[in-house]
Image 1 (cartoon, each protein chain N blue to C red):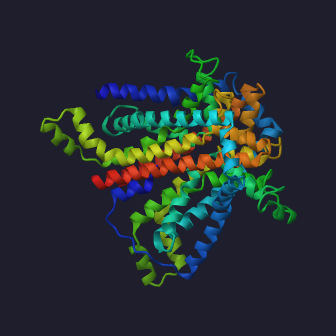
Image 2: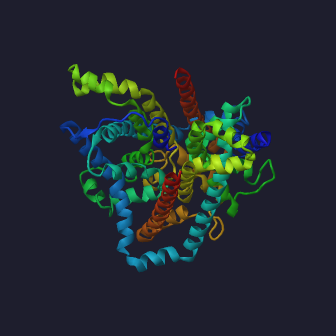
Image 3: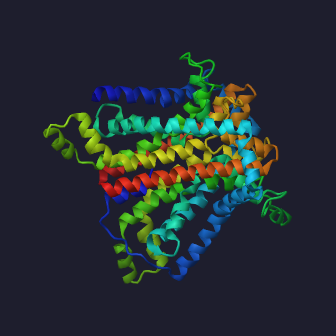
Amino acid sequence: MTYVLRVVVVAYLFLLVAWPVSLVVTHTFAHGDEAIRAILEDPDMQSALRLTAIAAVVATVINTVFGVGVSLLLVRNEFPGKRVVSALLDLPLSVSPIVVGLALVLVYGGRNGWLGPSLESAGFQVIFSTPGIIMATAFVSLPLVIREVVPVLHELGTEQEQAAASLGASGAQTFWRITLPSIKWAVVYGVVLTLARSLGEFGAVKVVSGNVLGSTRTATLAVEEKYLNFDQEGAYAIAFLLASVSVLAILVVFVLRSREARHH
Amino acid sequence: MSVSEDVARRAPARRTATHDLTRTSGIGLGVTMIWFSLLVLVPLAAVVATAAAGGLGGFWSAISNEQTAAAIKLTVLSAFAVTVVNIVVGTTISWVLVRDGFPGKKLLELVIDIPFALPTIVAGLVLVSLYGNDSPLGLHVANTEYSVFLAFLFVTLPFVVRTVQPVLEQLDPEIEEAAASLGASRLTTFRRVVLPALVPAIAAGAALSFARAVGEYGSLVLLSGNLPFRSEVTSVRILAAIENDNRSSAAAIATLLLLISLAVIVLLDVVQRRVARRG
């Protein structure tokens, strides 16, 4: 029975994930490194990759600062509406990326959004521009740091922080020297997962970006565009670059986690 | 996935001393809530408000449009079917990961997390290369209604596994051995001893997996072909409405999606609480 289950599970995962994902590699390198080189030398693709990297890094920085702050507030303080806030913070994970894009356009759209026209007359364009892409990316990956940090803070308790405070440490000193080192790994996992999720965002970015070649086309949008224009090799090559980063991200978290598990 | 529940179960011991807001944390709370509102709450409210502005009649006419209704039906049925498969297969996978040991098991752990991190458009591309028109398997799922099921299955794979696995790890095999020594068959032991302990985690994973599937877009673009009345999902209809500058209709369909996700999350939360109370 155990043996049967094992075979079934391995076969299922092989057919659903491992085999399809491995095909990206074989398709990309069907003609050696030609396809990858063509992508890396194409100025439009360079700007797409750069935009994706900028949006992902900025969104990750925002979500990390926000996430650590919110986690501390949620775990260490009492305030009215705390349960509601905590439930709402998980919301972005269950909202369709297209709905995320629509929601941002309805508020920040330059023509008839709620805030868009006033922002635009102040010279600040959000939709069809980089800030919109960053916001869409930050929206979809918002809870990931919080989900890693909150349980660790709960488990940690406040004894050490109280000890530090009683010895005269300021709030900032306590945070940098006691709290942050203890939640270090949780933050690292959160950052890696946020980065992976951010690099790959597609639907929300498609709605807010306008998908203009060379200016607001991200790497994921370029995969779609190349595939639909029968440039399969190009599509596979960008997909390979994106997939390598995400597999690397999982690998990093995986190795760190098993190292941590061994220490305990 | 639900890390907090998992840890709460593992280490319920230490009570965290919380205190009322100091001035610094008060300011911090203010700043973070303003950002959260600007990024998430106000935009989502704008979706609901735009849908509501059309009145109940407008809402109904948007979602009862023949093509949209077909897309909603396909999306919900496929999401439901995928959730059922995930409940069975996801629980089985976590069982194998926790209770079985064989070389290469660690690799499986890695494979399960891939759908989390892989960009959805890449997920669609890889599924096309195995199940599309030049499928090495001879399976032509692309551009059929089954492509929707396949894409959902891929992107929701980790949810049930990752919620059930930590609970199963905490479960003491001795209780199962006790049941077995009292003459219970393996199936009875699983049904009467193991399963009740897993139900809350399975329900949580199922809710996440359903909510994710209902809103899925990226993995379908290349795989499903978006054929009206055949393989078109709800998010594609919303996008079409946005591109036609028909905002009220886009907002109406989006609101329906938000309501469906909300209903499923609430329903499974109720299931979870009921089981927890009984146990």
